[in-house]
Amino acid sequence: MSDQPTTPGNVVFPRGIRSFVLRTGRTTVGQQKAIETLGPKYLVPYQPQPVDLDALFGRAAPTVLEIGFGMGEATAHIAGVLPEKNFLCCEVHTPGVGALLKRIGDLGLTNIRIVQHDAVEVMLHMLAPQSLAGVHIFFPDPWHKARHNKRRLVQPPFVARLATRLAPGGYLHCATDWEPYALQMLEVLSADPALENTAADFAPRPDYRPLTKFENRGIRLGHGVRDVVFRKT
Image 1 (cartoon, rainbow, N blue to C red):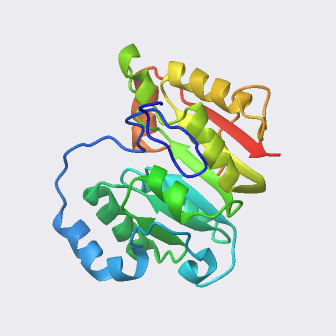
Image 2: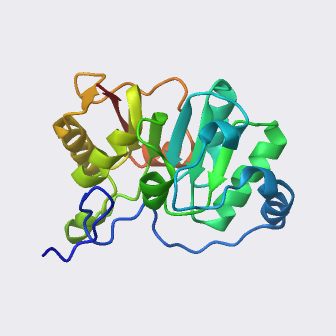
C-alpha cells in the first residue's frame, strides 16, 4: 500500500503537496482593520463539502479560482477589469488576506470572495465538478532545489483533479518566472487528456493579467516570465 495521502476518488497526491509555503509577515494596522470591517462579508470559512457558488456571490456568473494571491495586487486588478466574473481566491497568509480586503474596499469590488485555507483542500472538498470557468495559478513557489521539485504544486495528480472542476471550455492559466518550472507546467498540462493548449507552447500574457511589482523585479533580474494557458476539452 502506498504511504502517500489519497483523496476522494482515489487520486494520489505526493506527500507534502500544498498550495502554499509557510512564511512570516506582519499584519499592518490597515490590513487588520480591513479584516475586521470587510472580513465578515468577503471571507468564506473553509468547509469540507461543496458550496453553492451562486449563493456565495449573490449572483449567477462564471467563477474563477485563484490559488495563492500573495498581496492581492493582480487579483484586484483582474477582478476590476472582468466584473462579469466571480473570483474565489485562496491564500493562507493573513497579511495578504488583509491587503486584498483593503484593495476590495478601496476599489469598491464586489466580485471577490476569499478562503483563508489551503487551496488544494478547497478545490478537493468545496468545489463541485465542472463548477469553474477558470483557474489562475500565478507565481507558485518554484522549489528551486532539485530535491524539492516534488513539492511543486503543478504535478499530474493535482492537475487531473483540478481539470474535473473545470466546466467544458474552462481554462487553466499558470505563470512563473522560473524557466524549469515553466517547462514542467507545459509538460504536465500537455500530458493531461482533458486539457488542450491554447498556443503552440507558451502563451502570450493575456491582457487581464497585469505586470506586478514581483514580476517587474524578476524581469530586472533577467527572469523571463512565461504564461501557460490550457482549456478543458
